Length: 133
Image 1 (cartoon, rainbow, N blue to C red):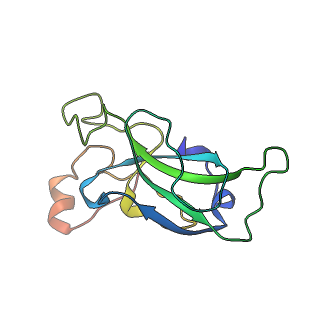
Image 2 (image 1 turned 45 degrees about the vertical axis):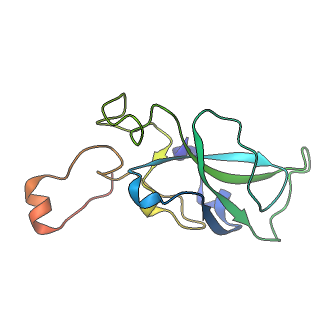
């Protein structure tokens, strides 16, 4: 879950590679996966599709136990809002979901009104205010 990812887990990130245009996505799911390399497109073994992944600097150390690197992977499932707008997450988002507009290398990202499926109030829209959740 996103809430279990700490800023320390991300300190070696140098870039995020997007495989799709994230401007049309209200949210993406993020996870820290154990991967055999610091960079390159990782293998993907979930339902749905991979949206992006992080690249690590050469100073990132592999786990002594497994020889793997912890890298963020961004993904969506078939029942997520982008493909099923009236489905389970029409007015909410999964626990590991964050607004991709709030992401950057070494930045965890956060939920927003948009990612949670709720439009801002009329007063907030008129004032141009958006609040992170």
